[in-house]
Amino acid sequence: MPGIDESLLEAMRLPGARGASVVDWISGLPLGAVGDAPGGDIEATAAETAELARLAAESGALAPAGRDEAAPSGKEPPVQDLILTNTDSYHVLRFVSTPFDSTVFLHLWLDRRDGNLALARIRLAEMADRLVLG
Image (cartoon, rainbow, N blue to C red; front, side):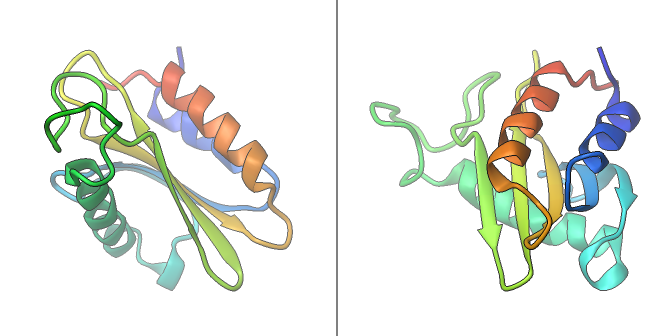
């Protein structure tokens, strides 16, 4: 099972990948990063994407139907992934389920012209399922 570094290198092999990171959405700190970051600052990008991830994970409006509480209870975050598009790129945030509290996500920055959003989403889900933290 791949660790953080191997997963990030695998993400960078996706067509159009510009940068990838594993981020803790509670602290906003990157646990690992490769490639470029928007604006050139990996730590700032991690903190800003963590804000989005935290908002989505704690949102009652985005929780699955039938779920009574907004915050994750146990291993599964209520949101699987977030996709943000802008004029030249995609940002895909994939939440990672773990045996303990899930507060980690994969962030892929993908060039809009060269990337394949559907493929990236599928591959990030596979990577998140195999990722070993620790």
